[in-house]
Image 1 (cartoon, rainbow, N blue to C red):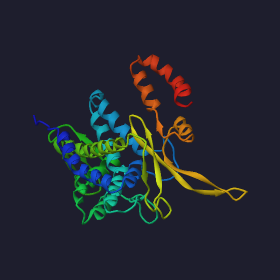
Image 2 (image 1 turned 180 degrees about the vertical axis):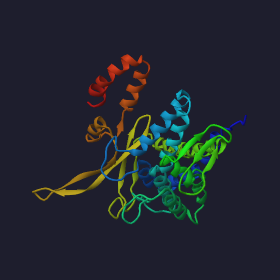
Image 3 (image 1 turned 120 degrees about the vertical axis):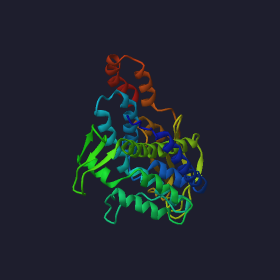
Image 4 (image 1 turned 135 degrees about the vertical axis):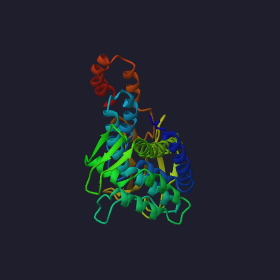
Length: 320
């Protein structure tokens, strides 16, 4: 019986070694562009408008549930999550913006779209990332993406052109229009899934680490593009035990009827509703996340009690 080697930890460590210097260099080059890259600002939004958070939660929950899934369900779920992870736009956008930050370029809201603002294919995203990294000392950041992706494997899983092969050469059988049926044997299948998971997790670890670097209220200078042509003083909005969740600055001045100029505030942030009320009062050092505190308490209770308390916590504690 062939022993399948779990290479996840090996890949994770390799990818951390690749991505950590990039994050560090971006931090040293421009804190404001690093923060904008981490916040993934695309325009007006609030809590619950962050697709990447959903991807992070899906991957984390799948790892927790993996041992509970019986028979073939575990492998099928791993394959479906693989497609989700490899297609996830934000990891390509984040790395692209960090590379641009090290090149003294400002944050760009869409590096991975074509001229019609349509999302690129995975192959195109990797090629564009390679182009952005070209002639920098971070050309190696493209390798984890390339090694995690096989177009035929991805397409077969996404379009249900595969089956689990349980006899003989066990693995994943690909039956599609790309040629003769192909078998991705168990080790090969395990490795490509683990590479995608390690890619996602290593980027997320670095993401959370650098979000947490900013753990106290402070002022930094904006980029010229954000400041309308000049650098402006920016206040960081910090959530305790989390890190930076936004920035606030004097965006300009409105003229009143008597000719006086009154400053107005511009803000890029993704607060929860109760946090927004504090921010509007000029409070930029926010308490720890209420949902996280509530979930920790509810997780300690029996499921039948927890289910009954969730609506009450949501109404009287989280949404107030």
